[in-house]
Image (cartoon, rainbow, N blue to C red; front, top):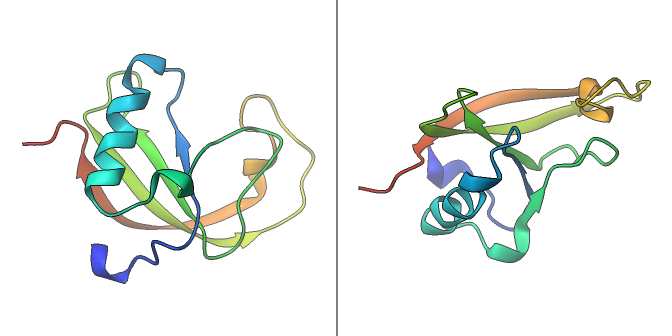
Length: 102
């Protein structure tokens, strides 16, 4: 539930190369209570902390919703391809929100 989310934590946004949907995804997250200053573009060389969140456009290549996940564990790994250091991040699915607001 959205009420279980700590909006003071950072949320890392994965757009899977869909720059055309980035502002739409940010607006959808803001409409659900996330602060613009807490939404971080996910990069392969910097991961979030335990308790932070991940927001993923889903399902690539033509996403229609955003999957919200909580970071539950961060293990050191050797970066791998586009995933980078996120390979060592364990997460728990929390909820989904529609990409297009009704």
